[in-house]
Length: 189
Image (spheres, rainbow, N blue to C red):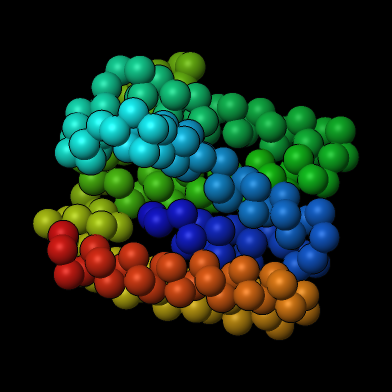
C-alpha cells in the first residue's frame, strides 16, 4: 500500500483525539515501516546517482536491503512494542505500535512478489499475496480504487474529529498524493 494511504488509514484508526501527540504517534507508526525504503532509495537515487532500475529491481531485493526491511517490518518487534506500551501504560508507544502493526497487516495482504520478511528474527519467510496494491497482474485495478475510497473516508473521519487547520492541509495533501499515485499505478502498471 502507498505510504500516504498508510498515514491516512492509520491516523483515522488510532488518532483519538485527532490532535497533539496521539495524532502524531499514529502518523509515526504509520510511516516508520516505509521510512528505510525512502532513505535508502533516496540516497541511492539522488546522492549516489544509481539508476532507478538498479535501485528498484536489484537493490530493493538485495540481502542487505531485505535485512533492513525485515527489521522495520517485523510483526515480532512491533508486537513487542505494543505489549511494552500497553504494559507500561505508555499511550504514545501503544498508538505508534498499533499504527505500525496496521501498516504491516495491510502490506502483508497487498504485496504480491515484493513482500518483506515480516517475522524477523524468527523467520525469513515472505508471504507472496495473490493481491497487489500496484501491479495490475495481481488485481491492482480493483485494489487502487478501493484504497482511494478508504483513504477519502479516513480523511472525512479525521476531519470530523476536529483536525487543526494545518493538520487538515497535511492530510488533504496526503489524500491528493494517494489519488495521484493510484492514478499512476493504474496508468503505467
